[in-house]
Length: 363
Image 1 (spheres, rainbow, N blue to C red):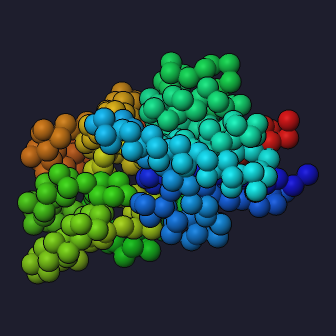
Image 2 (image 1 turned 180 degrees about the horizontal axis):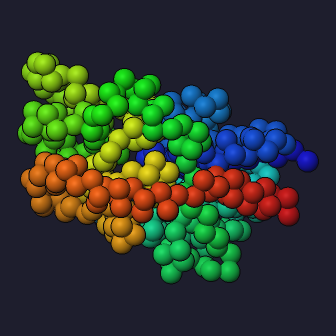
Image 3 (image 1 turned 90 degrees about the vertical axis):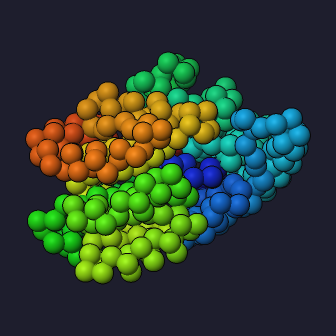
């Protein structure tokens, strides 16, 4: 039996990358006829998906949390239109199963799956569900999630804890290999700063203000987002002899390599940190955003409670350079955090979810 699979997600890398990681695990097992991706394309989704050789089907979607009445009404109209579009396109595609990785972009496709009586597997990447997964869990045939902590918010009878699916490169590449590919001297400290796939302005400002001191302390890889990319390059040019120790870029496809090479990460606390930081055995300073329902605080707290991260509130972001320097000078604490992060890794997460998708599709 060959399978036709519909993926639905969008918005951020924390939702898209898990879908692609599970797809790769599905393809390893063979028996896949065709896979299509259903979602909006207003945040770069199409380019990411098509780079993996998938056909992209545009389905409108919109956020609803925190909207004013007029904006909320427009979002509901857009979601309704997206659901009708998803019904039409899924009916034409005839998938055996629909796999959703959450976020508002997945909602129209998930509702359409239920309307068409297609099996639906929903994956919650975060510790706590947003409004989309809170709704989709009621429609789902089965639910997968990253952490045991999430079981408090999900239907236990149809939920399985799988871990967060990451790209195989995290487990196929050593720290020394990553450093060699990035041309990082063996003895140098490395810090990676990444404000998620869209960048984070508050985080960028803190780095920009102190980049000369940071570059003396470590080689700094900085994912800035497009908005601050030009300023980052100008600051790099101004560093003179330290310029090679500051390596900014608006986005990095090789971010897994950078994380594997790093001694410390400074990041927001989107869903991806729950899988990628453990997979890279990477200690971190996490600065949770307060948007999208504040779910980042729960993600950061889970890693901190397990000894793998330190949480820094955005209101205290001026302390960031001192926190970075203090951690880099404390080898025993860094090693303890590295060990704690590594203990949370789930190398089999992608395959576990892939097997769940197959199981549901063949019922």
